[in-house]
Length: 122
Length: 107
Image (cartoon, rainbow over all chains, first blue to last red; front, side):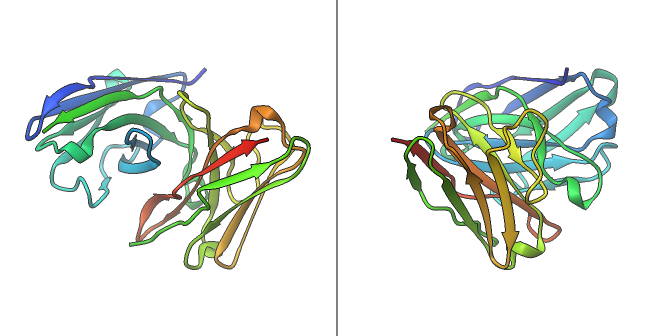
């Protein structure tokens, strides 16, 4: 059974930093690209960042580029999101999600975690 | 930037058909998928690659994608289908993009 368990969220002041983690199990972690997706309170879904299965390629939304860094640890089957220079508009529930399959037909997410809440106070 | 536009809300009577649209420039040239999100829960994939249903998703959920519009159709809508629905697409120039979301109310 695929499981994704996020942690690391919390309350931080504007300009501060947080590191989110996502522990994965139930699948061969290094085979699949992973993403972070966030949802501000009462709002829609926003893709934040993605990383390839090998970790060699990373991608970011313009809204977080230069402030957030995605990474993964194959030995721990874990995904991370280092968030620096946090702003009030980064306040959201952050989900980690597994890309469904390789190839251009697989750019969707078949498993999501329960999310970890990040609150940035101004 | 690329945008996917959905109606904010759709209302449907039990047993009737609900159609949710997702509009974007040349969306039909990309694959579209749909997620269902109930209050306090994580999104669940209900349609992928325009019209395919994941295992465990009821047959009443179907999808199509052509031109500038992708459509999620719920036939014989049930009270349990009341939720927010999001479309999503991917393109090498835009990466992942989600629609604005549609709240489906079963009256």
